[in-house]
Amino acid sequence: MDFKEDLEFLLKGVTQFELNGSGTPSSVLVHGPMAFPIALDEHNQAFIAGARYGRGRVIVITHEGLMSHAPLKPFLFNAMRWLDGGRRGQIGFHPQIQSGPALYSQDGFTCELTDFKEGLSVYCCTSYSSQHASEIHEFVAEGGGLLIGGNQILNRFGLGILSSTLEGRTYKAPESIEHAMKAYHFRTMLSKFAEHVLEEKELAEHESSYLKKLGQDCSSFLRMKAEHSPSYDSIRQLLTQLLKTSGVPQVCDECPVKDFKDNVLLNLGMELYNVTPDPDAILPYIIKDMPNLPTVSGVQVRVDATNEADELWRSTGLFLPPGKPTHIYVPSKLVGCNFRVQIGCQCDNLNNADVLKRAPVVTQRFGIDQEKIKVSNLWGGLIYIIVPKGAKLGPVDITVEEAVMAPYYKGGETSTSDWLQTVRHYPAPWAELEFDNIIISIPSEEVRSLDNPDTLATLWDKIMKGIAELAGIPHRFPRKERYVADVQISHGKNEAHGNMQQEIRENTVRQYLENGAQLQNWSVWTALETYLQLQEGFGWDALKKVYADYHEMKTFCNDMDGKMNMWAETFSKAVNKNLAPFFKAWGWPISDTVTSKLAALPEWSENPMNKYTCNM
Image (tube, rainbow, N blue to C red; front, side, top):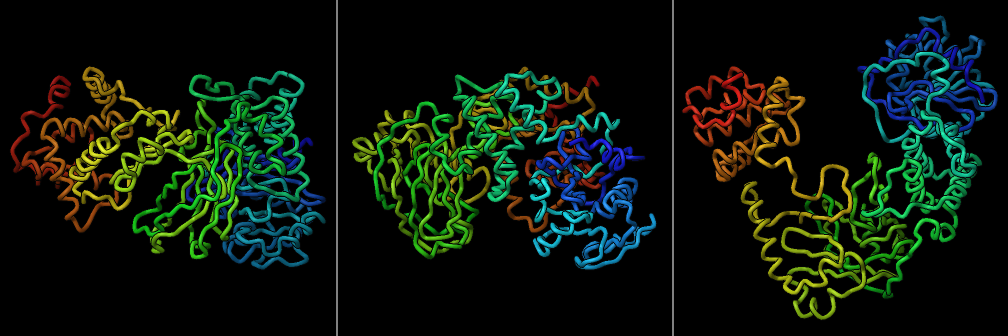
C-alpha cells in the first residue's frame, strides 16, 4: 500500500524529533502490510510508526513520555489530526497521561482524562496491560483513532515494540516524502529479499544495506509467536520456503559467513526451528551433516540447588545432540522458583557481527514451570541447571530422558583412574574441567589426551589464588568463574594481543596525548596502559594494598570524576608518592582539593609520563 499521503500529512512542518528528557524510547518493529515507519534513527530503527486497521488509524510512540512531550508538538498535533480524521471529536487520555489534555487543547482539541469508553474519536493510552484490548481493537476497526505508548495490544495492528532502545536525543525528520517512502520497512524488504532468493532478482544498493537489519527483524518477528495471526503464519511460511530453497550456510571457523544474505539465512535457521510446527522437516536444510552421537537413557544427576551468590550454572556432565528434543524430570520443589534449564554454554550474542564463524545465538533456556520439561536446541549443547541467587534447596536429583555422556572432570570427585579409563573418552563433543574456583568448557578433543588432570587442577588453583590475593578477597570464590572456549566472541579475541608490545604501547600513549588527552578516548588499550604503568612502577603489592584499602572503605563516589579522584588519592597514599601529576598527564580530572592533599607527599621522580610530556 502507498502511504505517501499519510506521511505528507504527518510530517508537514516537522524538521526533527526531539526526544531529550522524555525517557528512553524503544524500537518498534513495523511488520504489518498496513503499517509504516514514521521516525527512524540513522540505523533504520523506527521509534514512531503508524498503521491503518479496518476504517481506523493507529500511531505508536515507543515511550509514554513522548505522547505529551512539548518539543514534539508539531508532529503530535499532526498525528492527533490524522487519527481524528477530521471529526474534531472527543479525545480521551488514560488517567496515567495527566499532561495530555493540557497540551493538545492548545491546538483546539476537546480532551478529557478517562478510561476507555464509547463516544471517543481518539483514545490515548500506555498499554501496559491488555485491559479493554478487544474493545480497543473493535473501536479502531470501526474508524476510531489510537495513540498508544506500549506493546500489549499492538501485534494485530502490524506493530510490535522491541527490547532494544534508542538514545534520548534529537533525530532528523526525513529530508523529503520521497526519502521517507524509501525508508526501511520490514514487510517491503522481506518481499524484496524473497524475490532475490526465489527469483534471483538483484537488490538495489540501499536494499542490500538493509539485509543485516532484516535478519535481526526476522528473528524478533518470529519470537512474537503470534500463532493465531494470519499475518504471522503467512510470513512464517514464506521464511520457511526461503530456507528450504537456499538452505542455511554451514558456518564454521574455516567457512565464515561474510555475505549479508547468508547472515539472514543463518539467523532464520534457529528462529524457524524454534517456532515451526514441524522442526524435523526443516532440520536437514539447516544442518547438512548431522552428527550421530550415542545416547544413554534415564540418566540421573545430582546437582546442588543452594546458591548464595549471583545466578550460577550447575553442570550435569551431559550433552544434548543438535536438533534432538528430550525431557528433564525435576523435583516439585524446583517448580516455579526461577530455576531454569540451559542447553549450550556459548552465550555471547553475535548479532552485531558483520562476519560470523557460528550462528549468532547458540544457547537456549527453558523455565522450570512443571516437573517434566521438554528441552531442545538446534545446535545442541551441554546441559545445565541454572540456580537462582538465594536458593537453599540443597542437593536435588534430576533425570534426563536421553542425552550424550560428556567428558566431565570434577576436582575432588572424579578419580584419576575413572578419568583415564572412561570419562575422558565419553562421546560428547564438549567437555568440562571443574576445579576449586574455575570451570573450563572446551572441545572434547582437547582433553582426550589429558593424563594428569590433578596436575592441571593444581596449576589453576594457584592461578585463581593469585587473582584472589590481588583483589584482596577470600581464596574460595562464592561462585566459580567460568572460561568457555568459543570460535568467535563479540568483543576482542581469544589470544594474546599485539597491542601489548612495548613500541605499540608507547605509540598508543603518544597518540592519546597528541589528541589532547580526552577522557572520551581513554578506553581499552589506552586505559590499560595507565594501570600497567602503575604496576610496573610499584609492583603487584601496591595494587594489593590499594584493593585492600577499598575493602575497608564505608562510602564511595558514584560519579566518574569522584571515582577517579578517589583512586588517585588512595593509590598515592598506598605508595607514599604524589601521583597527581601522573594522573593529570592522562587527562584525569584531579580536583584542587585532592591536588592539595597529595602535594605533601614525595614526588614520583620515575613518573613514566614525563618522557611524553616534557617536550609538549
